[in-house]
Image 1 (cartoon, rainbow, N blue to C red):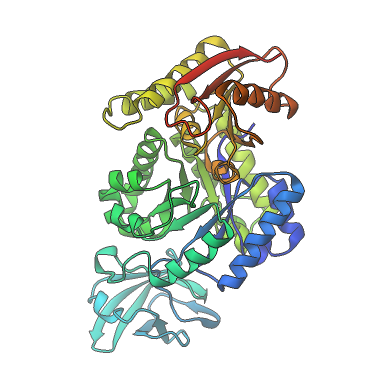
Image 2 (image 1 turned 90 degrees about the horizontal axis):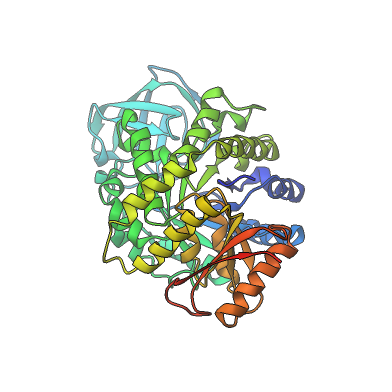
Length: 473
């Protein structure tokens, strides 16, 4: 059973209903609607398609709306443009069109954001230019890394030079539209501090969407603790982050972000160029396969596919491939070493208000180790208890049960968790009995299995204060 979750980006390649059904059957846990491309209507069509097909397939599939943020993009290339090393290109502010001679950038401060000697990275490194001269209305830059550009690729402007704040007014309009239809998660781009997350202004999850902070700026790394505290989950967005940091620092930073997120009970997604070659190729490179496996061993909750599924030639094959790599890496994950490390990190943080839940989830982890527990059944209104349990990466299954359908969908992002809707509430005894009954009926546990039941005193319980080990009848 694969424990690491799969996030797949939707796009033209998944707009065919059978392709979308295929990637859901192949194991997609969360579908990402990238609002940096296309209209809000196109995004809404994709959102509704996921809801429809997931219901038909009898699966819980979360939907993540990814807001564009202050993303700087070039004006559209009419055709594919090939740039060679040594080409000289003028860069101006504008949003009409781009060509091999003049690249327009939809950012009015683009000319003042760079000086001679600076490098300008386009399309997550697809092409790199170096500024040779600056005039009041344009930059003259030389191509130093050749590449092909199509559509409207992004331009990396260092965070300390970017004058736009996040979320942008356009972000908030998009947010309102998707909150209204009940989107499960929302990703906030180019976050610099916890203040950016608080500016989003939605209700706390699960009433509102689970807010995912994208760590893609140097400022976000420096303010990581506050951002984790203010967010529901984190995305390590390695494209822009790799432009902000020295490339040799990126793998270390990725590991540190994942460790801090999981210690705090927050899901974390590792994203960008994971199986990039599969946009056109039938199999990944050996380096890409190792990258996915290493992210799993780092403890990531989910791995994400971007262009591989959004515009790739065979999205279903990509999802299956990612699933196989993640599942194999899960099989040799060092559960015990990871849990010991997380316990040491988290249990030293007193005054968090979560000490009782911390203690109960530690006890559940120890029960898994010592009593041959087959599954941990976490009953939770908001999903908090489930996420706190998941941070230990136990070998036993985690079943996340909630009476709130929104919570159930949000748990699709949590490592190792099978989300289950608990149809009725009631007392602690009634809910625990119903949880065991549902788990057995769905074939997740069998008669004679020992299971751990973890929860509070009933619906609306503020703390997880009950752990029970029972044998499935």
